[in-house]
Image (cartoon, rainbow, N blue to C red; front, side):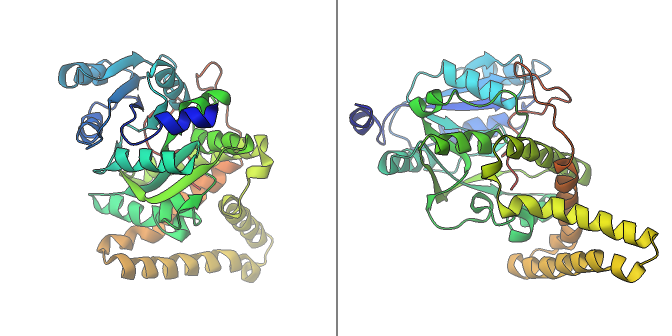
Length: 348
């Protein structure tokens, strides 16, 4: 019965609901919404924004400039809670996730629905395409889309089309989301990786399409980048403890680096400077060689910052991995609330 229903209803032109968790996004959300409403999709497109902002500014922008958007309140402010509320309010069986800092390219909705219908997947998504304007943002974009910065995750660097562990954003069959209970409210980050893992555990397929590239604005400074990647590592550790079978080699690299550097410091204190220098020296050579390679490929002088950007990402992620994340209760963070709609929450 399920397959017959999907065959009839899921096709290009089927109505879709685009869900957006947003928090304090009054400056970025208009561009996001413009890109959605500029799509050439032939069917109905419903847009729902779950607003968890600290002020009324985001809601005022939406009401004034986009009255066709359904605006709902996300009192818990977290990304998973906002997504679940928006999905619950959605009218249609195809759910397309968007973030308040993301820009859908032309033809995105048409392509993603076509692939969802053709593959029979529970979730179809693609690549995160970081686009920076400042020198730091361009260096961050170069790092994010490199193997040295992403660990080889296909949704960061691209790759062949097919089944995968996780994707950036995505389009879902609503019944698949409902069958697993939606997003986990207790996670402040890494909610997408965790949800895709549960879908796959249930026998569903997550499909990667490299042609689905969504623009994303990287962090604009070292402090913001370090905070972001510290949270990534902390919440990745939390998810891996819950689902140890989901661990990948790329998840271990930053923690092992931190352990190696800590061991080097201990050796230096113990009076063995030659041994102590081995790990830092090897890491520095790797950073410099990798940065030169990336710089030659991108031809952007902003990569002079790349060694520092990569080190910030690696060390922040690795340190965060060893610190326990306080899971949210009823969608509320045990510590600092994370801003919704800030981009992919799975960094590796």
